[in-house]
Image (cartoon, each protein chain N blue to C red):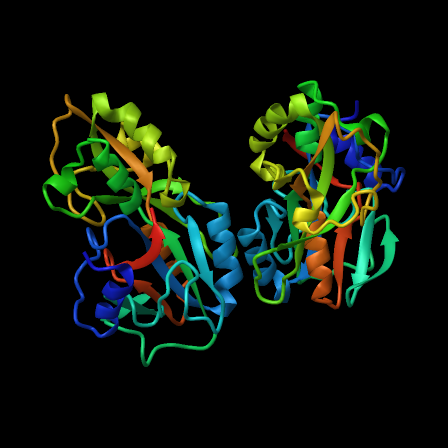
Length: 251
Length: 251
């Protein structure tokens, strides 16, 4: 296994642009959202008010490109980025040369890879991992707490958990407040505004036996991207889905 | 006992300007810091990076005067305020009429009244309360995490705790992360840069028996005021010490 530093060097040189899922196991990975500084207070306040979908693990102030949780350059050391203009995806890029502005503020948010690893180590069955699929994600009717122009409904991820593993799943994920923490809903998808669990808004659905498993929902790090884009900032940059920053911090 | 709403009405009409210590027992009280919006991101980030001295319980965005945790007007409903200009105390005031600006952002931070009440209810002896004195506070050499222009050392409060009540004191205060949480230091004051425990920088010292009690230090809500003033903002407003916002939230 590469060290996080060596792995990031590979991304820096654009030698690899695959998902970071399973890469440098045991090290914290983080979602990234970059915005011009005039949005920074409202966005940080949105995170402060909505810690379950938006657990802040690091903030790079305007002019800073090196996180405190990784000896990295945020402009080059992720495998793939997405550049949005006026709320619309303009393109994906392997680095941010040519896009970087001195007034950019970058937010790094915890991600569910952390608690998934803890669940698997405890023997909890995660279907999407066993089937090698992306976890299914859904828009809900759960309103986030508004901050400035940032508002909208929470996006959740769903994992169908074996009924006998439910208590342990709740207990384990509760220990990771910086990785979305305890579930926000268990059971009937309709109660949080999900009409058809077979058709996620993002990711892939894996069929499961309703007698054996129960759907469990967690606040999802897609929420701040979704909410951020609704503000239509002239430019907003994120990691490409599944292509996180690998930090130097042990989980 | 007055309801918080009725008590705030008394302050609104400037009929009382005494400390809120012991007033509306059982309701959360909050420190207040108000700054022009151009300082808001850096200050919120400072709080996010230093949650023990700066536990954010509410933020009023520019243009807002009503907290979410109290049906109050932040400009009138505290008993006494302090107005600082360029980092220097200009005056105390009973309301903020004549000072309020549309770009003011207000931060409400948890305060130690909450955990003191829990300690007293559990039978823990608090000398300063028994002697009816203000808790002693000290500058330390513990550096806060910097954010923008906001930087400096932590201010702590000290309570001399009976040795047999130490474990319980730690356990109880740990349960109140929004009221400074667990102690940050126990024992030798010199280890955190306090040269003379008999001479606090703020508040009053109460002598205690070193055989019987041990000094216990908590992160203090004076820290953000101290750090804020070093930035010398053209205007900064706080509650007067001990004259908090009484909220509608039960502790």
